[in-house]
Length: 527
Image (cartoon, rainbow, N blue to C red):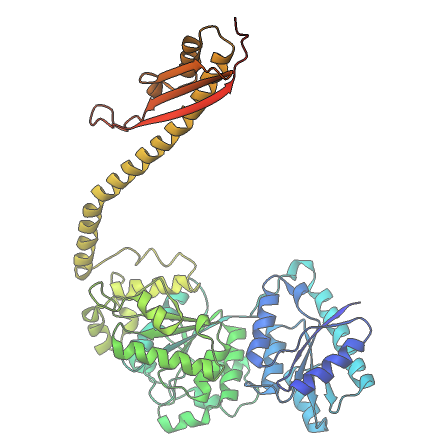
């Protein structure tokens, strides 16, 4: 059996030594080493998109890999790709490390420096376990998704006041309205406002889960509040200083537990990067960056994207930027924002309509926003673009515009009417050019026919004219002129002149003629 192996280590010397030993194992097929946790997870996710059979059987993780801690990476791989056996390389393979690795989902621990026999035994055991899991999955479950469980969407803001929380709340409401179980997590740990926007008073928060090593369904149930609008809420702590208790490890554990219970998990990451919401952005399937079309916000969005890239949290091309408070009159349009930030720009934009939001925000009833609201239509359309809405929930708000958007629609109508004559004239000119080119083709073919007919006839002019006109369409044959004659050098020469027809006859005379010329050997004996 061929065992495909992927090694993850940030140490080039350790990578060379590991790949050298793996290459000596019978049946082993090691891939080039991956140098960080993000690249390793991306590699496995791409392989899993086509099915479990394309995943490697064994993944070897070096303890020094970064930026994600090795044990967290082992746990993430075990949760997302259960048909892959994970081996941890560590210089201290003691009982404590072994127990922690087994609890994280590793199938073996190998001590450093490497030993051929120990490495071979661990790889063989992990590969056998992976093969058994894949047989258990069976053909009907061969298509393993890139993420086992729900979809995590991280929503971050370029700066304060750009509409991050409003966007996160309505993404969650849209996902729930389409029939999917949804959780809304507030990881803006020092200034979270989801409770205020939804008029919730609840004493539990995400900080209560910070010190729990095993976040079970019962623990989640005690810490979460099921809102009247449908989504389950995991709120930020009421006391901002308690946000420091939520570490990146705690955030990963909580999100992994939520992913296993809910189909959609929307995380409000706020506008300041802490270790917790940085971990959320890193593990999320989709990262949404909210900005407004002004210079300050766009510069802040660019700084945020660059910071994520420097910290190896998220690549710019893997980030979706959505423009809030968009108007057609602003100088900064979404395409420009995309070029500045280097991210993918969402096709859906959220229009500037604060008057629609003000009553529900002041009342703390953001979920009661009118279905005819253009803001709601924009965010729910974004939810459909992100794959959070199955389509049934969109018609309720799609296409409904307020009077505020009437000016834009009128401008579009006037622009369309103004462009119509230009488009028609351009099409007419293009078609006339096509007719001219076709006339060149007909003239050359008719000249060939005329020359061949004149070469065997006693009356070359008459025979050539008949042959040329018989092969021409009606629009060209009426004005065709043929000149065929024999030369003294034993050849026959024919020239056909055609007038280029006009697309609309009678409206204008197109004074352009095309000449076709042909010459052939005289085949009739000289008298």
